[in-house]
Amino acid sequence: MRNDQQLVEPKDISGFLEQGYRVFDPHLHSAASADVIPSPNVWASQLYRGMKARGWGLVTFTDHDTLDAYKSFTEPSPDVVRGVEIKIKPRRIGSHTHTHTLHVNIYRLSDEQFQELETIARSRDYYAFIDYLKSNRLPYVLNHPFWHEVYERPNWAVIPEILKKGDFPLTEYNWGRIPTQNEKVLELARAIGVPVWGASDNHVGKPEFATLIRGDTFEEVWDNAIHGRACVVRQHRTNFKGQVIPITDSRGYAAYVADTILRCGLQLISVTSKALREKPVILNSSSAWRNLLVRFATSSTADKICRIRKILGNLAVSHGKTLGPVLARPYVRSQERDLEAIEDIIDPLLARGDSGEYDTAITAA
Image 1 (cartoon, one colour):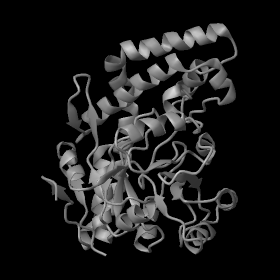
Image 2 (image 1 turned 30 degrees about the vertical axis):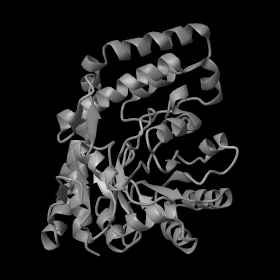
Image 3 (image 1 turned 180 degrees about the horizontal axis):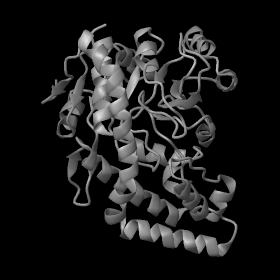
Image 4 (image 1 turned 180 degrees about the vertical axis):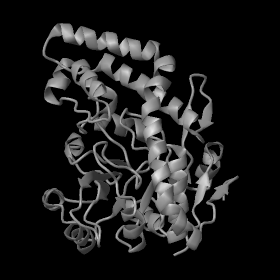
């Protein structure tokens, strides 16, 4: 299948909305995820109300290995799409006995299907996992294809292989990755013919207009997505003056991470000890000191810790523009190092196939 999806510039979003496209953010985390600070702005019900007020047609929450976000909704709503992000580290894929962890978004699944998929994922049986998804006709997506756990040695050769074999009907352009990695995702998708949609993967209560797509129901949206009719919105950020700035390089991405750090500071200020007792925050990053700092800042064991948390939050807010890029630098560099290894695997494949650039939408089509 030829992939002729458009990469939409942020300045052209309004034109697409006037043409009947709807906004969708298919990869979004709420307070139910273990690595999210459970401040009021990331509770699923609060996110839902804000998104509907801003024009979202459909809303989904894809938390890490949990469906707890949907406990906020006492009755099923047609515009709330049940979703989850499940991780699996396959024992074997084809001839590859060394693999890294894959993250898969799955939609429209029941509680029973979720439990069965979690059991299969823990067994690390990749083929049983994919067979279950296909046999139950569940919509599913390979998230951030060039991502791995910080403690893993990735095997990038696995990614084009599983996409080429049709194991995944869709993959994503992920706002949590550097632009050059996302460009490589788009190149690979074009060469293989795998559809792509855009996703924010946001953890701080900031859903994005990441995908523009037609459809009033999830079934219509999904059908358009897997047939390459989703418009991927270029990564961008909104600065303190309200200006929308496309993210096209590592420097712009570092500024985006700095904005995320500022928002984490606001979350630290507003989160309550009660919320942290009910849902502790667990971060597993590439830095042991960063993990310890998060655990310390989100501890609810004593009132004095609560005061320290607010002090740290205020520091993040007041010095975010200065500290943010500094704290983002190791994260950016690790992705840039990954990109070099990715290119060694992907570029020869692209040279043999259709490696044309993505079409860029200048105006609404």
